[in-house]
Image (cartoon, rainbow, N blue to C red; front, side, top):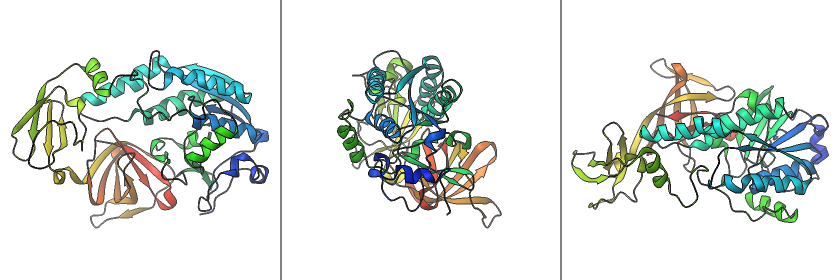
Length: 391
């Protein structure tokens, strides 16, 4: 594939800078970086080490940079309570402006509400993806361009934007361990055209080292992996029980319909769960189905977890795919489908359907295809072809 940067001279400009000092080989693919002489970059800052280092690198590379943080919740969330303060400190430390955008109302009516409704439907949602789509690359990008006059929105995500024949394509980071492309499949061409990922080809250890060398105040701040609007000291189960209420129901063996026990709310369980079921049995049991209408949790053996087909909704495609036709005359494209953040992609055929839906046929059975999670499609050279929400 022939790839290019909009301003090739920029590569020479920064090749000896700290931006490229720690970069790894990415198979000839050039991570998109615009000309710093013609760009103003708004950097989405959470107060964590990744976004802080991204801001520092852009400033050191000669960009006009301004920090921007979304005010999403009021209260003692797990990451947002100190995030704004830390972001302001970093901006002051590296010498850039900081702006905050009050998104509490739209975050509550959109992301948080959808989170509650998803669990009530027997799903296991992943709100960070929706937050990326709607908050960061929705409201923050709009504010950055229209109010701050920025040309691009950068973030500390580990992924790559590549330009090919005037199309903006998304690729995995060079480091599988930290790659976050799974969280970014919902971005479209307009959003990607304004997107920068300065950490594209860096390892997390190197990012930490940069933060320490620059004496950034968040250099040793731990990564946040929790849901930001769940209060400190509260489990997800505690939170959902407070919102949805305790709802006792049956735990049923899927093979014979025998009631094995009871639960206090089907929202406390997810597909593939083994621990915490509380049922003694001759062999390990897993959650294999959740029926919210009957308020029933079904369990079974590991073989009951296997599926070779799945459906998904609200598909988004990034760039073109190569379509083929099967023996029945139906069109599909080949991809490696990843059904959860920590799973390995598996070969699959993706059949686009009307209404932005897809039907997916895996080359071999996969475990615990979970409604509410994202299914992301990868092509050659780890390009993100798109994704959809598992039904």
